[in-house]
Image (cartoon, rainbow, N blue to C red; front, side, top):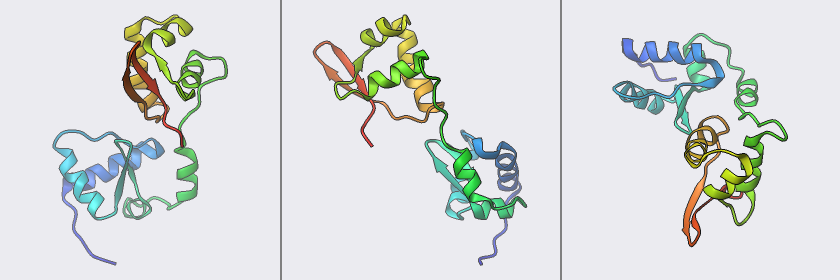
Length: 146
């Protein structure tokens, strides 16, 4: 095992991540420099723009390792069946995808609300990556196949 000394800022960042639990933290600004060092030391990892403690980082923070439980709890939430979010996700999973107008008609949302949902909730809450392509009837959005 390699010995290393952490700066107070790095220690504070690890403590903050330990307090965040499985949700992790989006780190911005000057703290990203400290985060980059912690990633290189394998104490934290970045997934979809959110930083989480690794098993090594959990040990360094004085937490139990339980990596299996952490991965299970970190799975993205699913919308309720019949909810508008579920409707949008179904439309985006179709091979032809969906336009903002189609989603707006199906949900009753205004176009700016549809775009906000595509850019915000799908990426942050449901951890889905939306691909958009220009088409004749407007921009087409879809979820890439896994």
